[in-house]
Image 1 (cartoon, rainbow, N blue to C red):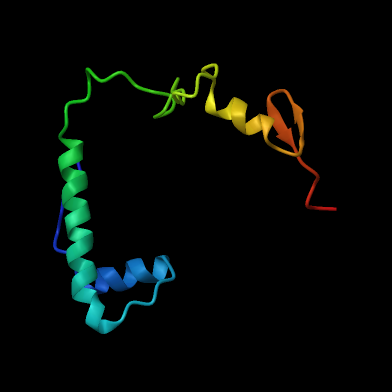
Image 2 (image 1 turned 45 degrees about the vertical axis):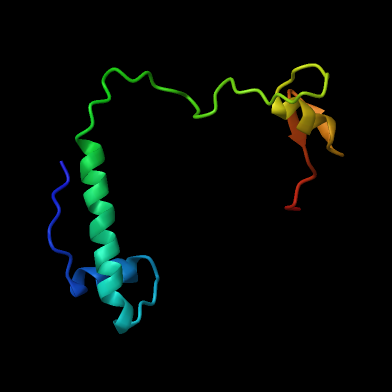
Length: 100
């Protein structure tokens, strides 16, 4: 379980160094507050009961685009593949190598 402790300016300096960020002295209090808010939200998420939720392999799994055009219903990727100027192999796009 994530414990939220008071984030210090020293902690923020360390985080910003790890992320290669330059944070102005005048912005540090604002960033500390925002990071503490984010950690508080994550802490709430960790307390959710998700045992009865079925897992997905993708958030938009089996989702088809439908329009009232009178055309046949199709997968979004089918339309995309029809409109490209590259070769198709095994339902994938074959492109020239950028590295020689």
